[in-house]
Amino acid sequence: MAKITAGVGSSHVPLLGVAVDQGKEKDDYFGPIFRGYDWTREWEKAEKPDVVVLVYNDHASYFDMNIVPTFAIGCGERFGICDEGWGPRPVPEVEGHPDLAWHIAQSLILDDFDMTIFNKLDVDHGLTVPLSMMFGQPEKWPCKVIPFAVNVVTYPVPSGNRCWAIGEAIKKAVESFPEDLNVQIWGTGGMSHQLQGPRAGLLNREWDNKFLDMLESDNDDVRHIPHIEYLRETGSEGIEMVMWLIMRGAMGKKVKTLHRHYHIPCSNTAIGHIVLEPA
Ligand SMILES: [Fe+2]
Image (cartoon, rainbow, N blue to C red; front, side, top):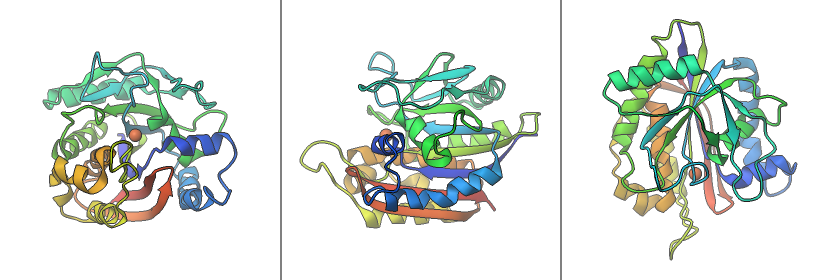
């Protein structure tokens, strides 16, 4: 049977994609950020996941205001790379796993989650930057990827509680798929950042680290953080952190922390990264 073996949380700051593409990973500015991913890159080489369910958000790159799905899953064979204004990133196309994706879609819908299904989808930095952070610059991504898109761009966005619950349902879905697959789930986005208005540039090291502590905890208090607290403490774009709760919900009650990294600033955001294993 398929099994979720690990969960990865990571920021998906677009500037990090630029740093990888332009070979700046070791310079004075980016060095301390990327060194926090060295451990994970080695670990991923040993883990060799077959499939990653990659929770991310589109930043009005492929999606637009005509249709705003709350939760969407990519069921296609492959996914192209979005042009975000300066041409698509020079990264490989993303290969999907349609059989597992359709199985997850069916299981979630029968569990009363109303999913949007994308058979055609191009993916933006929200999905490609975490792949670059974890895998570097391969000719071909070393695993299949199921894009799992969440609306955190336009209110109303889903609650942390709803995200946690859909993570639990993803775990159930994956573990009822009758093929031996090593599946990881990644929750991306965040941490504290606000891109506009009088509070632009807001960072909150203390709150971000409290959030990481809560992810490591055996209790599920983190799922009940209200939207207003994310807004107040982490800025308008910090709401992306609810996507990490999909990953955490899929880990089960207890987790073991394998790796953790936090650094500010990165572009005008805080960067956070955690690797968890079901305990
Ligand atoms: Fe984002």
